[in-house]
Image 1 (spheres, rainbow, N blue to C red):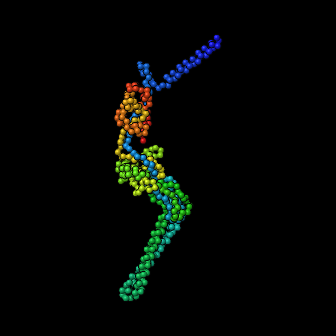
Image 2 (image 1 turned 90 degrees about the horizontal axis):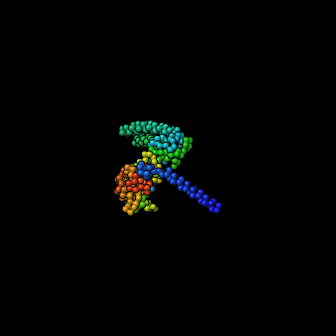
Image 3 (image 1 turned 120 degrees about the horizontal axis):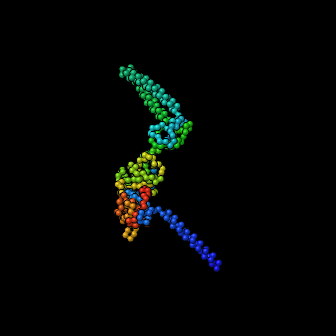
Amino acid sequence: MKLGTVSNRKILRQVSVLALCVAAGWFLKGRLTPAVQVAGAGQQEPYVLIQGLKKADISPKTSYIGHVEAIKSVNLTPQVTGYVEKVLFQEGSFVNEGDLLFVIEQKRYLANVELRKAELQSAKANLVRAERDFKRQAQLSKQNYASKATFDTAESTYLQAKAAVAQAEANLDLAEIDLGYTEIKAPISGYIGKAQVTEGNYVSSSAQNLARIVQTNPIRVVISVTDKDYLENKLLNDTGGKGAIRSEIVLPNGQVMENHFLSRFTDNEINTDTATIAIYSEYANNEGLLIPGNYVDVKIGLKEEQMALLVPQSAVAQDEYGNYVMIVKDGVAEERRVELGDLIGVSQVVKSGLKPDDKVIVQGLQKVQNGTKVKAELVNPSAGEEK
């Protein structure tokens, strides 16, 4: 009998503990459920999240992998020999056409210019003397006071003096050209890279590279398309200018560049190894986001936009009658039957059934029915945006 009494007490304790756990669970549920009491009704308004519709361009686009390259790029190489006296730019900076970048020692080339000037003056002096002698011999020859041989000698000396002046002038021009080469200036505007030589280094007129300048605005993006795709896609064939083309560039970080397309041309032959043809497009790059050597996603479509409403897929439900969504108007959930189109990302095209200012329920849809009063909170409108 004592054993039975002990077992009954144990059972009573377990039942008591279970009842306390159940009571605590119901208490916590009431505390954590995000709902509010409806005055006088004794019911709770379901808590839902709503989101606005997005209006977007749904015109078809074809994507290609594009390679960014500079339209103009220059390797600076010395045309004369000598020691580098000055490096007059900051590496990685933007330089303008005509900016002085390097100075190679100039004393020897300045001296050579002065020497050629002196030679020219001497040649001109000889020409003056030879011309006077030739004119004098020509006068004497007419009067039969000078022999034919003497006149011929004077004429030859005069012509040689003229040639010597022309040669001296050419030598002076060459000397001045070499002197000009001692100052290396930027032939184009763009960003300059690392200086391959520093002050004090000896350079020669060879293939030695001093620095490289790359133009970044405008800039070119090249895509390769198959011969079949090129022949079948009329947009790709329109290469005479902008035409009906709308081009978007998606950068590696996901940022989209729009309305930067300037012009385009197609290569003049198909690559027989890959059966593709290169299409070169020029873009404005005012912000410097397109970097030569980078790869980007190029989307090509019609210039005219085809705007449509997009509804998040999370807002769409389905029953035996078709697709529907629940909107919230004046705090009340309303059912709207919708006709849907293509799927674009996480959203779907709405052909009919919704208006641009409608707010659809994207979370808590299972809690409501047509006519249910709800507690609604608007989520970030850009959450369902399509790129």
